Image (cartoon, rainbow, N blue to C red; front, side, top):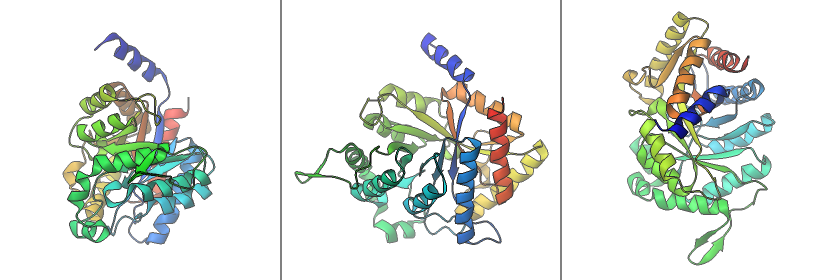
Length: 325
């Protein structure tokens, strides 16, 4: 380890962790989509009160257990229900859309809620193959266009986009543009973010690889831009936090069953690296270890406990453990 990195790790470990929320907007048993959306707003309000930095929502399509198909619509509602927490997408699935439409939607949000909007983009389909075809045609062809799509979004946010020789502006033009983040699980997505000069979120909770090399590659290849002068990284991690280890383990087992039913995720995906399970002090210690390992000071927390009250309690316990001193 070089001296500069060691210095950065020491400094990071002395600062309080920044925590954010990634909400998949689950539709739990005995609930309907309307109730799930109300619970999303409640979670955003509680996250703001507790001191979380961001509240992001994910995009999925035709999954019975998940309610958010249009992040920009729900974000408009969440913005009206909150005051200062940053709100954004984790992620808009860019291969389904044209850059102009995405930029216009998030410019609208940034005009309504200045200085609070994050545009997180990803390249997953967010649903079954047939659903992707119904939504946007040949998804694989669209994924191959990802560098072009990302470039378009980046240029639109910076006000220098041209199409067939004509300058095009994504209106309304907000006083403060959205922050652009790319979400991914491997070095390819990290390379895209670095080339654009955008922020990068490593999705540890859904990745089969450790993040050290991915984040290192992002930082080493980063090109400063109008979007960001320096590399900025967040790690997305699954968390189940409860008063006792036994209760945390019980909730984690229930969470694994729900995820398998809601999105087809295999139970084997739930393990120590993808999911931090334990008491508040134990989870805090694991996050601090990851902070030193990855040289990051912000984590975006995914908690898919299939009980709305227990899910809120997990976020409350974690906040108290991290910021009570």
